[in-house]
Length: 230
Ligand code: ADP
Ligand code: MG
Image (cartoon, rainbow, N blue to C red; front, side, top):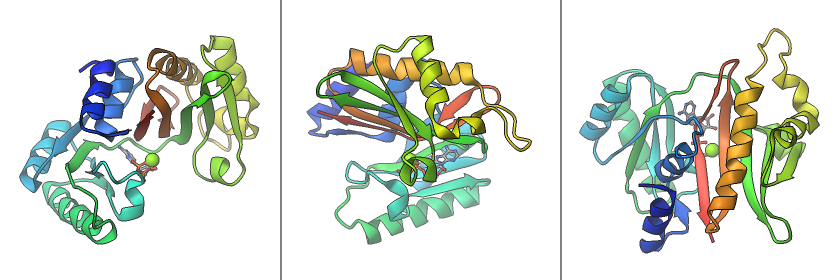
């Protein structure tokens, strides 16, 4: 399905939330790198998907009512064998039933495990005055505690992407710090520009949250994506 079909499909189902695999499919149409994913509806399905994708894998709850998956025990990372996948499947379904009894469980999303790197956040909001606006920051406490973020109104050109990256206080961490290698700033700029394009193309998208995006010395990968429709 192309981006407008993905959006139309969710609306038909009466949903304002794109499920993670739908959001990832939409952004991959724009060339934004993301994990391979497969929806599984049973333990056997999940094992089959894991074998196809290759280990280690991550399992996550798929439910239109669950927005913050880890809050309800809906995420298990770095699973290395069929047995771990089976156990994670059971444990996710049980904890979601316990923590969110009204959530409809569509299945469990199996995806490749992205190796550790620098966790970033890329967002898209719709400013009432300026329209689609891209947000950038570092993951975790940098955004939540320090509010260390930058914004640019779409469309972004390379210079905008470049200056919004350099503007955050934590910029130093991106350039190689204490023995860490610098992250791939070209890949990051590309992704910021493409995020803005998504906002310009799809009027129906109210907000998008790519959190986290894991950045590496060579490339990056979006490991969680949430899109809310208007
Ligand atoms: P939530 O809905 O709670 O935001 P996420 O999909 O972001 O759920 O998963 C929670 C955390 O698990 C992420 O912040 C990230 O650190 C880790 N994680 C999720 N997916 C992957 C993945 N494919 N590879 C590696 N780590 C992941
Ligand atoms: Mg997340």
